[in-house]
Image (cartoon, rainbow, N blue to C red; front, side, top):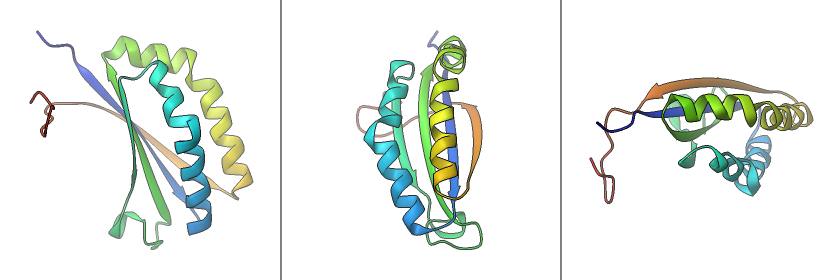
Length: 118
């Protein structure tokens, strides 16, 4: 039986396009890669439309997704890595003048595409 994959998503809502760009530089400059010490894969997505990239009522939104090979790997990250990495995010949020974060965990049921393995 294949191991259960968990997707841990963090959606940041930012107040301006400038704040979004600084947040993206921070994510892409090392934060997202730092999670790869625990996660199998990571990606960063700028949300569009009603969900925010155009700076509508909800602000500018960026979603980071991290794939963990099982609940134990996710729980290890939450114990060992999350406290320091979240503190860095909170310091950045304060500098940017307010960023709200929403975190979700889901079980990956299917994945398609080249090399996806179905």
